[in-house]
Image (tube, rainbow, N blue to C red; front, side, top):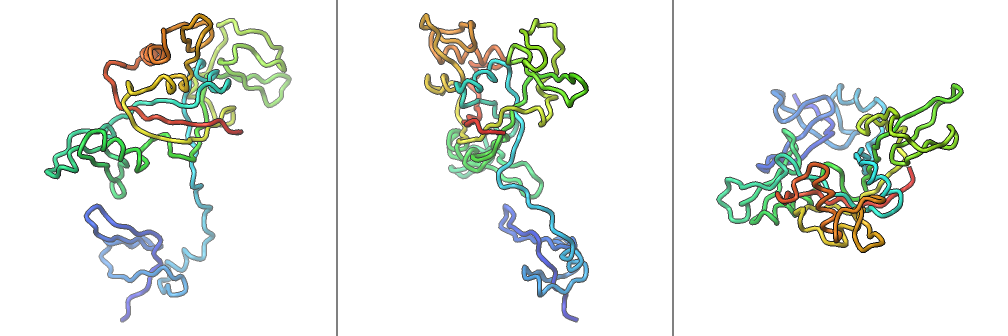
Length: 280
């Protein structure tokens, strides 16, 4: 009796160069049943696969994804003013390049690009720097890749004047919207943390233009300025209005990094995510 043809919906190759396939009815290379697969829908003879084919297909996921990212008030103001076009975030966990157990001189360092029981894979390199470069090249950044978008979460609140749908206002602005009376914040208002901000309240959308991995202390003066550091009238540099922190951009960024609990002296690997603001 001839074996039935099943519709192949997914296939690939393992790290050991072994081919695998998945049919529409759920059969794969680990199934006890012997089966034949095809990508041609008119050759499918499996009744279950045909039933799956008859159902409407779900809309495909967008090629470019959208993810949330947190910023404090000073950095939100820097983004709104156009002064901040890049952010640095720690490389964490098994994505940090570490010594491998390989005897190959080209695989002395390893970093996990994607952690998944079937589709996971790692980046390798003869040096720590080569491994970090491959980590970025193969798209291991948790914040996305070029073309992806980031919607900014910030401290906020909401009011419902006159039974309307409500107005969102943001701590970074320093004042209430004019539509609800205006006036400066006094510091006693109840704020909702940025981590709880819903997508509906988002007012800042960023498009990633470049992603790379480098050491924290490799930052240049130009990159420090792109982080939101700006010159003050007396020749010093400030992170936010009336907050003088350093004699040059790199020193200012160092103090900014340490003010958020980061360890500058450890010189960790960081994701460098460059972006441009787009309309939500």
